[in-house]
Amino acid sequence: MQLIDLPNLDQLVALRHDIHAHPELAYEEHRTAEQVATTLEGWGIAVTRGIGKTGVVAALSNGNSQRAISLRADMDALPIQEENTMPHRSRHDGRMHACGHDGHTVMLLAAAYHLHTTRRFDGTVNLIFQPAEEDGAGALAMVEDGLFERFPCDAIFGMHNWPGLALGTFVAEPGGREASCSVFTITVRGKGGHVGTPHVTTEALLAAAQIATQIQNIVARSLSPTDPAVVSVTRLEAGTAFNVIPDTAWLGGSVRTYDEHVLQRIEERLRHIAEHVARSYECSMDFAFTREMPALINDPAETARCRTVIKDWLGGQALITLPPLMTSEDFSFMLAQRPGCYVLIGNGNDEHRGGQATLGPCALHNPHYDFNDALIPLGATFWVRLVEDYLPVSHIKPEGDKN
Image (cartoon, rainbow, N blue to C red; front, side, top):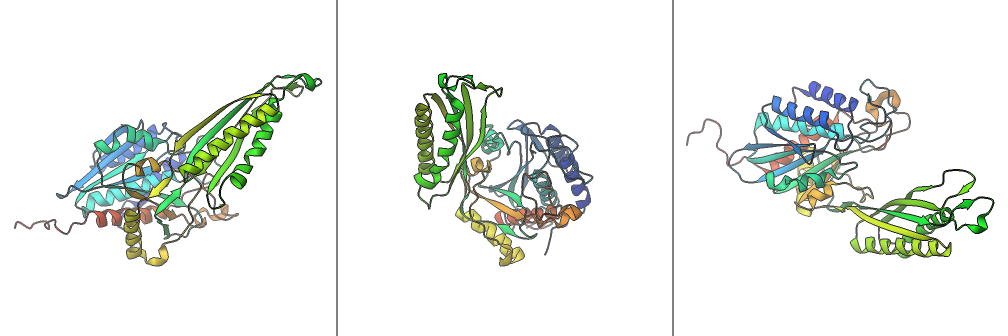
């Protein structure tokens, strides 16, 4: 497996460990963003800070081509208590890099270093370090802050690690790859009272519980079996004491799908169920439905380019097929503006975690997760090969050629 030369790999690994030890949540990535910016500046690469609040962008240009490509990495952590014991575990209670964004950041930095020092491309490479992927739609914030006007590009690419896929394997598939994300909230209002006199109350809590149960029938009975969709009730809150029937109850959850018509149908059914169940319990209700992010759609042509780059580098066996995911990813906001592809890179089977890998590969968002440092040169090599394929140097005169 041919990898790019990274003479500073030890420093890059140390940087990844430092970012992991100091995780920052959405739009709080001040320390991480400054580390990214100062690292790039230390290599002689100019940066722009504060795009989308805490985002950082660097533009590398070489040659004369007007073509441009953008590469994106996310920087934020999650509100999870880390349960690892390695030296670089989180030093902040209730926060950890449980999704590998620390590694994504350093993979892109490694690629930036190599591209800057070798200059084997003709055009512009925009290096995008995005905040708030997990909770805050940082991609949308950067778009709304003029990302593509300030840093124009012909295509944009993102990459995410995937536990359980072997090192040296990738997933690059065209079309819908991650679902849209919507959230709903239902507030049921009744008449509270003493538990000993339930006949003079109208029980909002029982109505809310029945709504939660009926919602589970939407996917099974209101949608076609061929329509992928997930409707999950994730919160149900009511009451303050054991001897008081509450007069309000609140529930909410998430909807994931790929099709707008399916999404509209789900919203209609949620509202209908909430209205009629609440009425049957002599209660009223308030309903809210918010579309938070669109489905992530990979462009066929740019996906084919990624597949060719991987196949030419590692062979066809490195390309793994996975079905579309019902998770969501705010890179979809960027792909809605420019064609591109979102690639998954195998994080291995937890061999890198040594004795802590007792239950197989940790899923993302798991308190025992850790990014595999072996991906730093792997991911960086993919980025570099993609750039060199997209921005070939065939017509740039060799150094010293005066003709």
